[in-house]
Length: 354
Image 1 (tube, rainbow, N blue to C red):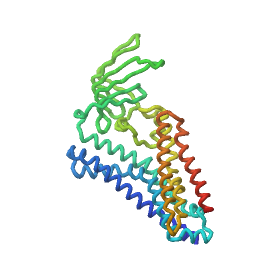
Image 2 (cartoon, one colour):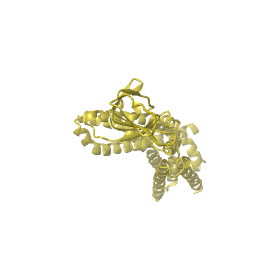
Image 3 (cartoon, helix red, strand yellow):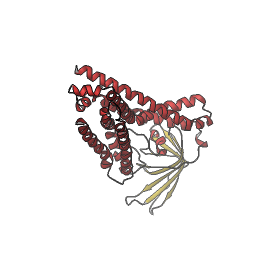
Image 4 (cartoon, rainbow, N blue to C red):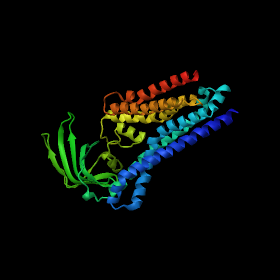
């Protein structure tokens, strides 16, 4: 009996969540295409370009919409069951809300794994593919100058243009600092080109700042740096989509960085905590299960929706404080999830006795 009931509840909630996920993703696709289609057509990419853009943005939209879809899908499932008196029948048979939540536990586990796969694999891949494709539609020399700064193992680097694959950089400046943090040497190069496993500078010119014996280098030379071509397209993005492994490499110094250390620490901790958002959303949706089958329980739906969206808003605010260095990364990552999870548990306890 328990197996049958559990399967029924899980199928019902999963169906509603998937329906909401498809609806939200479709809406985001429509809005995105309305904003971006003209730019695609201006570059003479045609309908194929529009479809290409659409396909590459779907993973990010799925990741963004998933927690909201879990909240809305769970709410609708619980509310419809309450209106059909199924929840009343279950409670009369001794199946309370806690037990109901235990039956449904595999559902958030499933969607947490989906969220993890999207955030750590599909979204970084699709984002990199989108940037490479979009930059490749304009010849490198025709791009507008857009200075990008990055901290590398060989000093602070600035370049104004980059190829779609990241293997060519134009108008490159390299700044070396001494142990005291002061500038010692500045190198200007017309081009940096990736040659198998290292960079090669063309048209390089040195300017010594610190006094002492110094010999200028040749105009054609190799340049050893931990800057990889695959990282170049991400440097121009305000919020680059990176996997937790890539962020950990930045913190460890194996990859280049463009932000302060607290930014990457916060992003790494957020990546670890993010899958738990679907558990919290389902927990916050539970009050909809005790809505009156005669009506009048709609306020519980609105309350669950308001609290769920409030969780996303407050979590985003704390993340912004963490990435900007306003608060510690740990506090930024766990405060909102811990607070709303506790609130959801207390709310569920209160609903159990309602």
